[in-house]
Amino acid sequence: MPETLYIGKNIIELDVVDSTNNYASKLVANQEALDGTVVVAHFQGEGKGQRGNVWSSEPGKNLTFSLVLNPKRVAPSEAFVISKIVSLAICKYLESVIDEDVFIKWPNDIYVGEKKICGILIENQFKGNNFEYAIIGIGLNVNQTNFQNLPRVTSLFLESKKELDLKSVLNELLKSIEIFYLRFQREGVSSIHEEYLANLLFVDEMRRYKTSQGDITGKIVNVLSSGQLEIKTKEGQLFNFDIKELEFVF
Picture 1: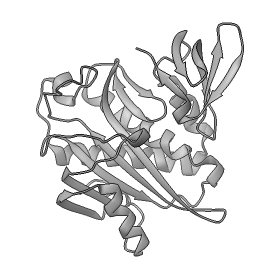
Picture 2: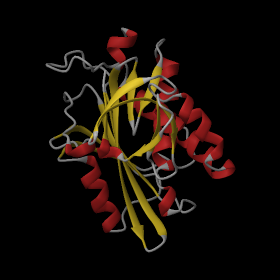
Picture 3: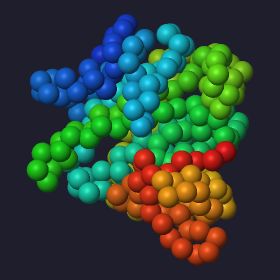
Picture 4: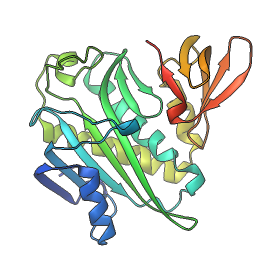
């Protein structure tokens, strides 16, 4: 059990499940999920990713879990702060394990250099003007070494050359998430925003991006409270993009 105040104190461990996010959603619907509940699966048959993608993971090699939070102090219009908290917490944990630069690829993938090591899918539930629950699905590549036909993917083992205990990794991740979550509750989003921006992949770099209106060249300068990515073009124009409106070019 992690050394936390409440995140991960209630852990549900499953051998096989379609998706830990789906399982957690049912717990929430049945009012069976305590704040901080974690659902861990050894294998997900239908792991979810961003943009409708499937998160594929070798059984027993990686971490696939969902965390349920009840962020009462977060307004629905600022829900993206949950993504900032979680992605930054994961980023900082990974930096303590591997001697490589770790980045947050907007909106919430975690990269080592230019290779993906972790994916995050957050599903929020609102009731009127209240933020009811955030269900945070996390897939972290830990001990997997073979990613067929996926050249831009890596794992903790490939980066550290050490096999890691999955339960220990989970415990340390949950501790890191709680540290940043409590920091946000005490100090507000401004306390983590600049650190989040500093850890963004390609921030302040002039890069090419694909958009629905064609390619643009610009640099990331901000992520708004709505979650939109703000890019300043080489001509000095500012554009804001939603998740499905922009694609990174490597």
